[in-house]
Image (cartoon, rainbow, N blue to C red; front, top):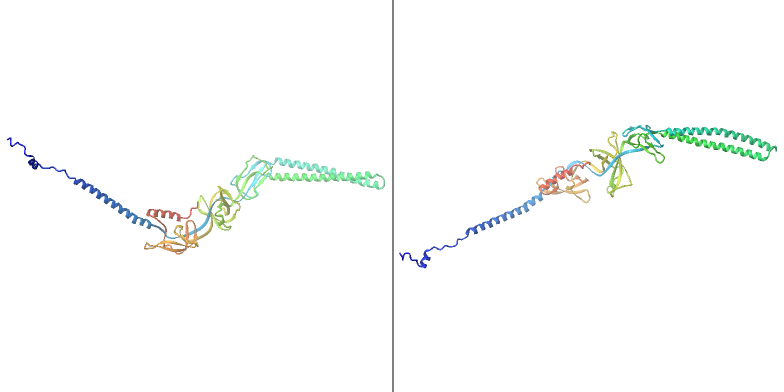
Length: 417
């Protein structure tokens, strides 16, 4: 037993005992490789996507266009301005005599006829002046009787003195005194005549002033303003106080303010029209009557007044209405037009080029003849028909759609206000 339990030699023990080797790490290396493969695949996919977008996406963006067919309609080229309406004629009716405004027989908006009584001023003071002038004339006329008698007496005395002097019955000094007395009497008569004429003129002036206490309309029109009230005291010694203003509203004048950059485009006699804020679709036509040479300056902007008249039989046009004014330089009706953005204008302004999309989808450049041009559209007089698809813009699909909507708005007639 002792031999059985005896330990075996080291060599034999080493041969019989299995050797434990460190575990290999193949799994870790396998996972790392997979990660690198996945990462490489993602990079390839991203590169392919970027290449596809940069190549095909960019090409589709470049190729997107907005087209529009020519539209048949009216077109005009005009100078626009803003202005105010005023009566073609108005007058301030004032008082020529001082006194209390006894009665005002009209109100704003009333229609009056020429010669119609519209106001009265208290005439008591003037009537008193007339009575005084009448009495003074009567006094002078009574004095004239006395002075005339003195002339007759002096003339008789002179005749008698001449006879006495001729017969040596009186001295020469008595004859001289008689001559002087007659001259004095005649001078007194002449002075009285002058005083009577003066007093008669004063009486006439007082009677004229009495007439001025009744104020009549100097023209047919409408009362557009009242500046005085009944009971108010009017002082006409320095200036004639205004009582009412009468305007002829049967015809209105448009006073348009035109910038100095555009005034050179206007000519007297050219057609014009205006629209109102409350009636944007209605045009009021007229003819340019006057361009006032003296400008007005507002905020360092030089503006000239261009005037034209329009009839107002229904009275719908009122003072100080704001008008959007159009002075027509040229116009055409029922013609083909395209947006301005579609035409590359030539140097002669009568020709140009457009890009047209054919039925096969190809694009071609076509020469066209142009006519009237404004800020929105161009008249096409040759080179296109109503079925041509004209390129008016390019861009991405979203931009093209947006451009189409914007272009559609631009193709609409310009707003009246």
